Length: 387
Length: 175
Image (tube, rainbow over all chains, first blue to last red; front, side, top):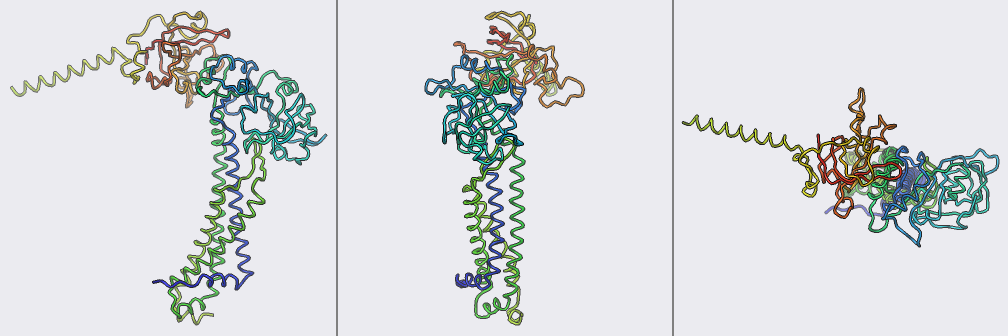
């Protein structure tokens, strides 16, 4: 029967040199925090694109636009044609789920004569929020002529103070002033970083009669292939129909290298953390060779002592993980990050905590095993004479 | 006596092989891999006087019975998922892989002729007795694939923008 050292022995050892333990704790917590930030970035990006797409909504846009609706231009009558030709269009509150939209990237000035930042503006109709069920009004009203709704993350996208997009404030884009009439959230979807303006007002401001896309909500018995068939039959319009979920899944693929890079960073940071932990634990063990040999002399087996050293390191690394997770939840979670398509919030979710804590555990165990093995290689007589 | 038997067996095998090869040549559609439900649309002989797609777009009236010949393509994805429908292109247009120095991975999209493509393209959809499109993917139903030349019989459906859709009742796969 293996007789283990008491649990308190490890705890007392950590408190014996509090400064060193505290520094190691901070180093390990920094490593875990870095990992949590990277995983939160990946999860935020994934969630933003995943929650944006609905498999019962089909986006109809120009074939020539490839996979980017910003480049799409289709006749405005397409919406009416779709509504009249398709039997499988859904209906809510006697409103057909056909939403013509204009989607543009443009320079937005939030302060007069300011430099302006690149923002995403969507021309919308009252059918738009019926299709985008994630959208919720936070405050204010639906926009009238030359008014706009701003998404929860649009200030992050524009890199401005959220106060500059408060209700009643005026911003300028496409040579026209627009007054903020309300704010909306969209459950973490990409819409949250957009500015929504009434379609007609936006078309007038841009001197455009075309639209970028038509979003079609399918009835319960309809299939997206009905819309696809319509698009392929109307050769003159050069349309394509893609489910919204497939559109955002394709964007996920587009951002795959970024996500892969994120996971590589996680591995590199974890690797660096393990080496830092190894260094600290080597220092801790080498300075205690006599003590460890004494434990052997009074009857504790080498394996028990090695387990105690691993316990000590694991305790420290798990405390560091707890500290890092607390900081991440309070300071990192929800922080808005700007990217080409808009903005998204960092998500310290259960997966991020799991990855962070697992790396923390790995830092403790893997960082303690080599020093513990080294300590066990000393002969008792040699160890007792060590300085 | 024994060598005579062997001679007869060899001759018999040769005869059977010749018959089988001959049969397969006389009916190219038998090897297309069409499903049982799709076999009713397959024609055993090629219909005569088929029009090219461009000619059909120019001269065909709505609801007219016609026969057209074309190659499956005209889009990166010429199929309609889950439905017996596909796009065909006039045989006068050459897909990208049949042009010099072109290594296009989707030659059936005719991307080299994007300017003239709309006037040379039509939709073919196979309909049931109720006039609804058959809800089986054309590749599965008829065993067809991109760039195959097909001769299709059916009723023309025209719209005010000049688009041509063929409500098909029969198909012959030329190659």
